[in-house]
Length: 66
Image 1 (cartoon, one colour):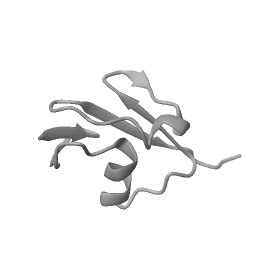
Image 2 (spheres, one colour):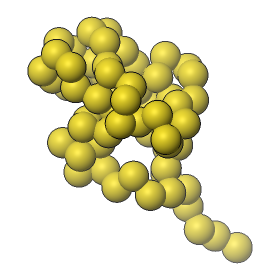
Image 3 (cartoon, one colour):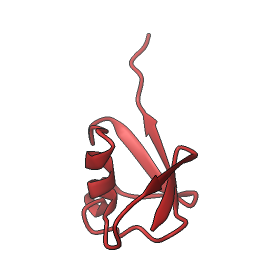
Image 4 (cartoon, helix red, strand yellow):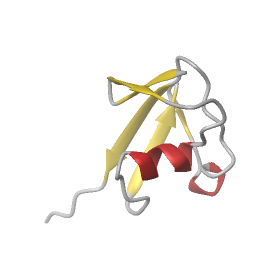
């Protein structure tokens, strides 16, 4: 299966969850927001949201500033 994460193609096994993908890509689950196909996914759903072929995932990190 193929998905896009921040416009980069990633090949995954069927049944991979959003949480699995973040772990595989070395992305900390803290201080980020994630959207799949332009829909924000609540962090409590990351472990149960199974990715589908062609999903477009956007990961946005919070930046501290002042």
